[in-house]
Length: 484
Ligand code: BG6
Image 1 (spheres, rainbow, N blue to C red):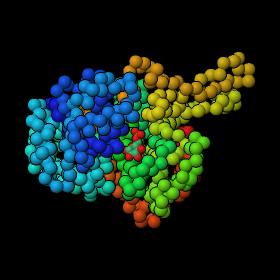
Image 2 (image 1 turned 120 degrees about the horizontal axis):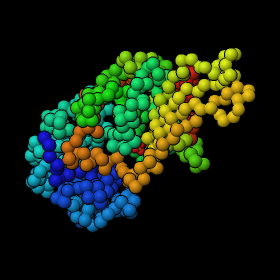
Image 3 (image 1 turned 180 degrees about the vertical axis):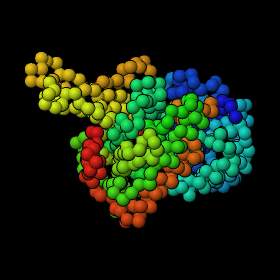
Image 4 (image 1 turned 90 degrees about the horizontal axis):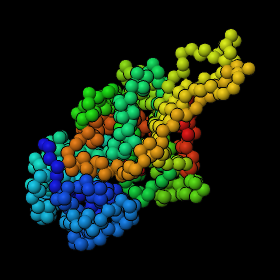
């Protein structure tokens, strides 16, 4: 159903995500005049807060996490906020919550950012209080389960109250401008698509490197590990966007139909195609940091790094490996996609008859920087200027586009700004459909089962390094070097 909600109900309103991302995003949208004048935001969580106290809490979060030049009139934003305490594990408080939300004129958008164990009781409470009717849609923040079975359980519970067209599963990577730009790069240019296949691409690398460690999320992270925290969602979404066929149009059904086909074509990973690691004490940017076991204060088998050689088994990608790696406490924060093209089929510059003198050819490479640098760099071979008495010399030179320079005057937006606005206005294109999530879990479960079967333990790596040396070997065995 098409409606722009005039109520937004935030579960987990006092949590970390709310403070760092959701409240700042909503305030920034308000500052830009993108929230309708009647939109009211109701926060709910376990804490005891009056409306005024919640507004003060929100003000503190905005002052901490939203740059001053994006805050607009904070007072008018804070006026939109109200609060209702709720213990979501029982039905008792939901009627009061419904009273607080009031009757939306156009519709209600709910954002659920709570522990997954609260999903089912929350859905039951919403249904009980009449907050799951046709003019209500719901956004679900990850983690959506810990494996295929538990994610199905959550999906079933949500589906019992909301139709799929009213369910918005969030993967905040899809809210990033540079991630959406992948679609523009591929499908708004004639240049790449004819070459975007196994005949012309040697391999793809996707790196999501972080310098942070546990960040206080001890229990959650130790249960999840890098594969469930990052690969199952963000990295597989990036892979799907790189590998998908051109959709018929930029709408929710067409885009998600194509992504799910890729996710379903992922080949089961074999022994030797994954490497896991766990960081030990080291240094990042010259600052000493403790090891994972020290932060956790116990020994653990959880991987803080994973590298995978993945394959998409379809015509387009036959024989093209996708090397994925992600980890905590790596030397720099960088998310990038590297598309390594093949060599030219024949070099006119090689061989004894050639004036090339055997000039070395370096295959073209496209590097798409997602963060922190938002740039696209295409390496091209060019002639080194000169009279070539000893033969022509060639060099690989980059054709660089720095997105912020190309689009000066635009905001650097928080990914959740886009996602919250789409949730309020009802556009599912950048949200993950049930079949996608389940295809993602199926593949991840296969890898985890293999690890369990093999009794695989993460190899240690020093914080500030690029992971265990086995991860380097994983690529180098195929003659591939990770892009750094
Ligand atoms: C989250 C993970 O989904 O993504 C975190 O749970 C991770 O562990 C974060 O740090 C990374 O997001 P971003 O936008 O900083 O790359």
